[in-house]
Image 1 (cartoon, helix red, strand yellow):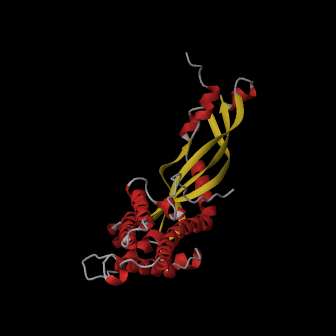
Image 2 (cartoon, rainbow, N blue to C red; image 1 turned 90 degrees about the vertical axis):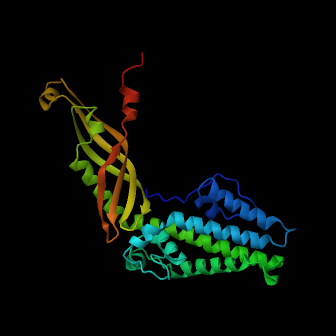
Length: 296
């Protein structure tokens, strides 16, 4: 069964906090900054509460985009063009763009993954520009009414949440589009290479089946898409030679073991997957738990 899970958080949410945003933040500073922003918003006796919220949220988005889209990685993308007046400048839109699709081309994202991201990126930029307006304390932004606060806070958080949801959706769409290629690459790797962990158990082994039950995209960089596949490998284990088996001096049995496999593809050819060096890891600890030597 193919599995796709959104990130989860066990952190209790302060009233009004968006669960998608909270689940995507790193524990510690990022989450604490988000909590502080909402504590500002909840302080109804403070006429600067939305300005304080706006400043904290603008800074949170800045830190989030810098983590998800490092400057050097954005500049290294083939689609990058300097749209600023600074050398090697990167805009918020470009960081958001990278956070969603890394170095993947617009054509691949649009035509293969069926994602339209332009409106989402524009909404985020507009939301941050609105926040910037409220960080400058002028009479017209001082003590704005509750209805306007609710509207602006909702628009801001929706724009951020939509970006984060689109990041997850992009990775989900990639795994759906490339599931068969991942499966084929894993199967080929089990045939091509002797699996050392299984080879240590028996004299000989033969892989009977490979079942991939989960594929995740672990990262998208300027040049690669990184995958992690997990599942089960079914193998026939043999002790002794074929002659030993015929003479009842050996043994054969079937066993299954969990595995994980790390793969990658180039952003220029996303459907051509390769397994990383030593990327296939089979867990045979259950074998030793059942059949290993008794502890003294």
